[in-house]
Amino acid sequence: MKIVVSGASRGLGNALVKNLLSQGDEVFAFARSTENISKLTAQNTNKGKLYFMAFDLMEKDFSPLVKTIKEKLQTIDALVNNAGFLVPKPFIEMTDEDFNRMFDVNVKAPFKLIRELFPLFSKGSHILNISSAGGFQGSVKFPGLSLYSASKGALSILTESLAMEFAKEEIKVNALALGSAQTEMLAQAFPNYKAPLTADEMAEFIAYFTVNGHKFFNGKILPVSLSTP
Ligand SMILES: NC(=O)c1ccc[n+]([C@@H]2O[C@H](COP(=O)([O-])OP(=O)(O)OC[C@H]3O[C@@H](n4cnc5c(N)ncnc54)[C@H](OP(=O)(O)O)[C@@H]3O)[C@@H](O)[C@H]2O)c1
Image (cartoon, rainbow, N blue to C red; front, side):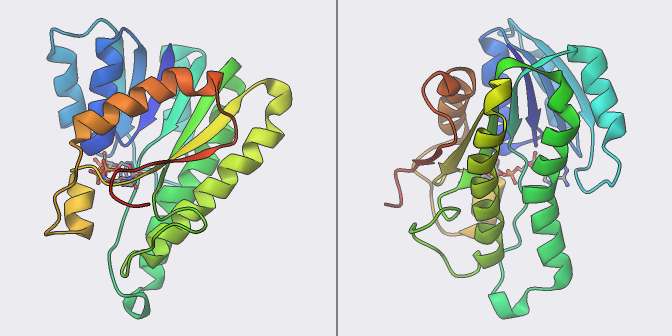
């Protein structure tokens, strides 16, 4: 499959790209930093093909990214909106800039990517949004993560909405509401907590779901969590 992954420089995104390459997929990966992405090309377990570039999802103009994806892949079978940004802070200390950065990366960037890449999606393709255990109604919420969880909630509802809107194009849209996996973001949010899953373990499931989930699910926000109910 031809798969685009955002936020591929570390954590879950990097582990996801590694996994997809090992199973023979053609992957376009990006983040602001590319050092760790470029290292994936050297791994001799790769059966797939990797393209990558540096891109900041806070940029106003997505056309350089979209142009390069079009040149390299021509068509897209799956887009994984994995990049995420978190400022853990008590709500009353949150600044307008904190709000903008979280909503720009977690909500506006998936909106712009889906809109700009729409002409490239093949029939039967899969848009997978990486949400959070805090990002759907009725889940356990944590102090300090209010705006982050709200942004992931917005991404979850966008998922449900687009699954309906794109039905005629046969594009499936799902969200995985992830529980904890050990990454830099998790350590920042919960410094003294050890997650039950490594990034590689969680990415193994995300890779499987990217390639197969849309055969079984559409418009779903699926909790993937050992740690919270
Ligand atoms: N780990 C968990 O327990 C957990 C739980 C629930 C949900 N999630 C979600 O899972 C996803 C991956 O999380 P993670 O734990 O792997 O986080 P992470 O280790 O902080 O990695 C985040 C990735 O997003 C990229 N990114 C951030 N801002 C960006 C920007 N402006 N432009 C382009 N790329 C940007 C980062 O790359 P650069 O800094 O190089 O740009 C990095 O590759 C996120 O959406 C997160 O919200 C994670």
